[in-house]
Amino acid sequence: MKTVLLDIDDTIFDFTLSAKAAILSAAKEFKIAFTEEMFSYYMQLNELLWEDYENCIIEREDIFKIRFPKLFEHFNIPSNGIDFEAAFQEHFKTEYIFMDGAKNTIEYLAKKYELYVVSNSMYETQYCRLTKAGICKYFKEIFVSDKIGHQKPTKDFFDCCFKNIPNFNPKDTIIIGDSLTSDIAGGNNAGIKTCWFNYKKIPNTKHEKSDYEITNWEEIKSVL
View: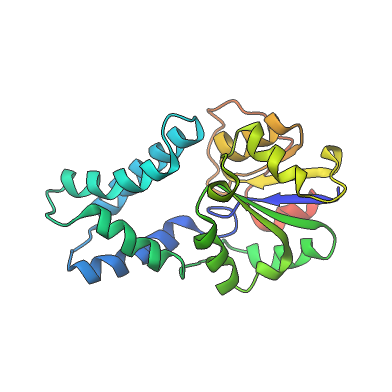
């Protein structure tokens, strides 16, 4: 193996904790008492919207236009959801909480392989988070859907990535990510090896085949 593609949220960084910190900071600005019930609703809604984006049902921008306005409507909160989204994004740029063992394992992998980021998000946001976390230096390139113009799991996304990887060989490439519908399906569509980071230890109800499955970062050393 030569090339390792890594997802960011819920693979390198804990999305739940990072998003929660950013939401609470924005809520403080807007003087909103953000409850656990509200955060749970947000997480469910956010997951559904990202799946719709992955399946090309909605555009990426629609996610940011829908999630907080719909949440505020559901809980009868009289704040502007679009403005809250903008505040959330600013705070999210600086929020990163590593998954257990992620940083040390990335340092380990960088000594042996060429590492690339593959993310369905916004380039500026993810670049800021990786830089602030001190790990941007380990990656040869950061491939993010809003800059590429396509999203995981589409083959177009991966084709664009591969064109920008010197001496690319699919047989020497693996993707590691938590999402069966984005990372694993995307890797399968692209004809590369896949490693499902199943840290939640959930059953594979999507029936996407992965070459490897790990539940923590330490286990990656038995794969790579």
